[in-house]
Amino acid sequence: MSENQIHDWIRKQVADNDVVLFMKGTRQFPQCGFSSQVVQILDHLGVDYRDVNVLEDMGLRDGVKSFTNWPTIPQLYVKGEFVGGCDIIREMFQANELQSLLTERGVAHDQQTQTA
Amino acid sequence: MPMDANEIERLIKKKLPDAQVTIRDLAGDGDHYAAEIVSTAFSGKSRVQQHQLVYEALEGNMGGELHALALQTSAPES
Image (cartoon, rainbow over all chains, first blue to last red; front, side, top):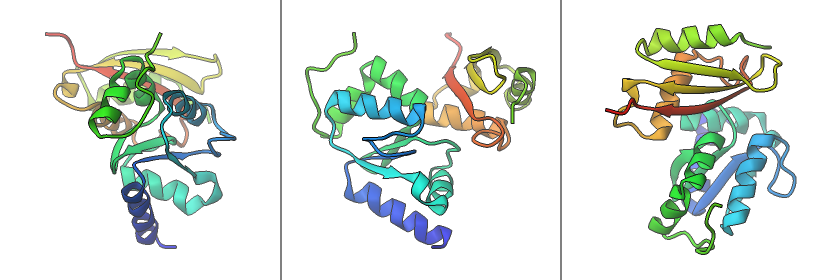
């Protein structure tokens, strides 16, 4: 696939799924500590999301970086918008901002969940 | 390939001259860093835009030569 085709495919994933996580490994078996942290946060919040394993395709791994203009994996999309990588997601989760964002965008999650 | 903390700081300050940069070597292996960066360039920008500025400053080293750099960015409190 050309880079354009890969970008089209990514565009379709983030349009068709409310929450998409581009990650190394799968949500069941993350293969990188940073991807694993975001999986734990999303699972903790009870969010339904599509996981995309970039390790399965080198073109996808590079394509998602150029699509987002972001050099690292994981990358989280909510309602088609790039929200951040591991640091930003963790920071937002700890400040309860991620929960607010999900609520604002109408994404179902466990409302009772608060950070300690 | 490890990258020196001073080199990271130099690249950031080249792009953001007013930046206050604090870098910690997390694992002591010269490959896993955390950087706290305060710069007026971050004012009014989203976190994603702030981190993108830092990645630009690192001139393509991030995700390549530099494997892990945890970022915390903010604008100075006025």
